[in-house]
Image (tube, rainbow, N blue to C red; front, top):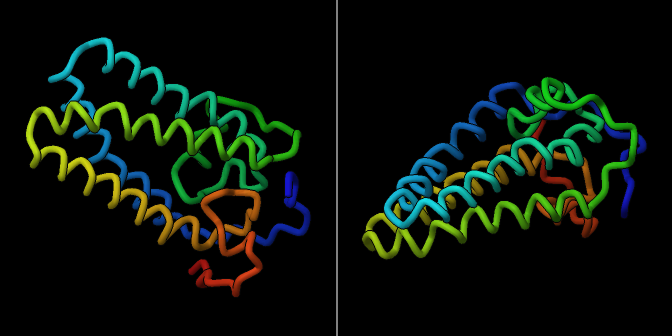
Length: 168
């Protein structure tokens, strides 16, 4: 399970997927920042540091090791990572993906109580924004991904029928 990058097919993502999934994250980021601006600078600073970790350090352990390094993928990180990190020849592991999941969960959880304190509408909008992003990422990105060590790709790990569409 740790390294299943042998015999990886060609890039399954058309470039528009990267732009669309990345853009779908922007409402969640904006609503989270707004919520935390209302709730205190310490939480906002922590949240900003976690975003920094997700968008830089975590890319070194995932994107720089990915067979699609430097290419369009499920987000724009495939294209942006080479600007931050050289290719890393070590194996891409499930553990790296789990750190991504933990960071994303923290990025969701930290603003949620502040959004709720501000108003129930803001809280519902925040939840909807995350649902939009995760649904878009899974529907357009993860669905096409052949990397079976990723926790977001349960169909590949379970041996279920491949549900990816063609890349075009």
